[in-house]
Each structure stands twice: as C-alpha cells, then as structure tokens.
Image (cartoon, rainbow, N blue to C red; front, side, top):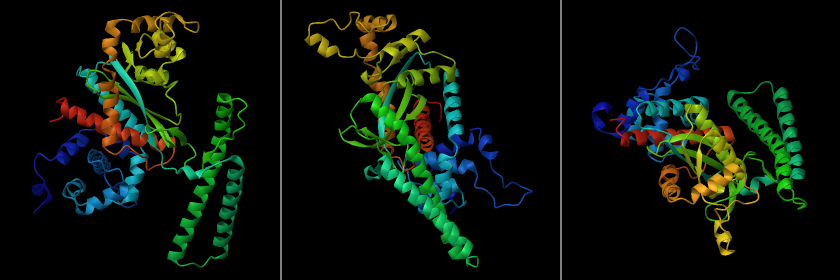
Length: 405
C-alpha cells in the first residue's frame, strides 16, 4: 500500500505538513547551490527538513540521530520524507544554520495573529529558565590550564599538517581519517582560543561582583560561552538562560532571547525593547517576577510607556521591620516610586496574579517537549534551537486557537 493510504487522514503529521507548505521558504531555497542546469547532487527540500523538526519537537524528539533512525522505520516520519533519504548530519546542520529565518518566521507568525486580533500585546509576561548546556562541569579550566591546552592544541594541528604533507600517497580511507583528525584538532584549538577570550571578560565580571575575592574565573574548553548557573534544584551546572516573552491574551510566545548570564537582572529592558520594535507596539502592562525587578529597568520601561507589574524587592523584610514597602525609598526614581504605588492597588495585584499562567506556561510546555539540555554548543546555535521550540509551541497554540484546522 502507498504511504499516503497508511497514514490516517487526521494524523498530526499531515497538519504539520500543511502548515509548513503554507510558509514562505524562499529564503531557504535561495541558499541551495545545486539547482537545475548546474552541477551538483540534488538537495533535500527544506520543506521536508522543516516539517521533520517541527513534528519531532512535538513528539519530544530532540536528537538528529534519533530522527534519522525514525525516518527509516516510523510511518509518520516516512510519510513526511516521501521516499527522500535524510541523514543525521543534514538534520543537525539544518537545525542550527537558519537562526535569522526562524527569527523572522516568529515575527511574521505573531504579526499575522495580531492582524487577526488574537494577539494584542496589551499584557506581556517575561520569564527565564536555565537550560543545561552540552558542556560538562569538568571541562571548566582556569587561565593557566587553558593556555597550556591552547599550546598543545596548536602543536597537534601543526604536527597533523606536517604528516599530511609527508604522506602524499594515501588511499581514500586514510585520507578521510586524516582529514577528520585535522578537523577535530582545529576545532579544539578554536574552542580553547574562544575560551581564553571569554575568560578575560568573565574574570572582569567576577572581580566587579566580588572585589578582592582573589578567585580566578574558569571557562569551558568544550563550550566557552556556557556558564555555571544555579539550577532549579539548587545545584550549579553549565547552562544557558533562555528568555521567553508571552502575550497575555493568546499565550503565544512573542519574543525569544538567550544569554549566558545566570541572573535575570537586566534582561527585562532588552526583551521589552525588542518586542516593541519588532511589532511596533509598546505593551501596556509588562509582568515579571522578582528576579527582573531593578530600578534601572523599571525606569526604562516606564519611560517607554509600559506599566511594570512585579513583586517589591525586599517586601517581606521591610514588613518585618515595620516599614511600608510601598513608600518611597532613598534609591527610588520617580518611575520606581510610581511602580511601588501601583503594586499597592488591588487592580495591579489582581492582574499580576495572571503572570504564572502566562509566563510559566510556555516554559513548562517546552520542557515537556525536551528543552532540558541543549545538544549544541555556543550562543548562536542555542538560540536557534530555542527558536525551534518557540515556533513549535506557537504552532500548537494556533491549533488550539482555531487558526489551523
């Protein structure tokens, strides 16, 4: 029987394919060099790869190798491929190579929903979550060790290059093996060099936070941009800080950002600015938890025309001391004082109670679909993977909202 007849008419894979088929993928097709009339092997249609990753994310599959295996035996994946062969390397490269396209797709999707008045941006909530990095805790090294590793890596690259020159007559298998060795050695040298660059910046930040501590910063040799962060269970592990901004009416993700800062302080202003510029609309109310609330960010958002709703910093301790947490404090700007007065009203408190159902909902859904540890390294690739989760989440929300049949 044909694959088309074996897959049920209401199967989710068909819905995913219809959605991808409706997208403008011209930016992806423009990057294909092997086209009709020119030499080169036929490229796999980006529509297939796009549908595979969205469907796999829905099914909580985050490994390119696992998807490649499923494409050989699972009916839904076979149907999406339609007889076209894919391998894990192609899938892995596609997932991280089109971050700008995914970012534009997120913008276009939300803009369409705004036109349909499903997304209003009147209330926007932001929340961050720490996601485990690919690097191991044992890969973090201090400057002296990193310099030694860098020297050894450069020496290994030089030695492999010399050996390849001396062994001119090699068979194909040995040539491929030597090329792989040189490639691995070069990548290691680049990672260690990147770690040394990141280390200087990290050391400056460490000294600024803890003056006179004397402790040296450490950086990972496998993922230099990852940082040790405090996780939900209280332990410290290499991770990235994924930030989502969510519309209060539709629960659709409208903004995605990834940082290697272990704190949410300072993240509110940058996300708010991106959302406002991206959709040319300033949110009326902006909901955050206590980790985002700083005098500087509150002042910036209030001046842009948004009303910040969040907990008062040190409210419980102030009440224990008999102080009024809503009264003006010494460090308060006019905007942060307005924020205190606003949070004293029942209307603000009632609206703020919606924050968990808005901001934490996409976090929980993405974690349930596999966003627990990144399989890629570096901020750029990590952000691309986070965008895949956001786009998939929004796709499922559009089904629930009745935008997709």
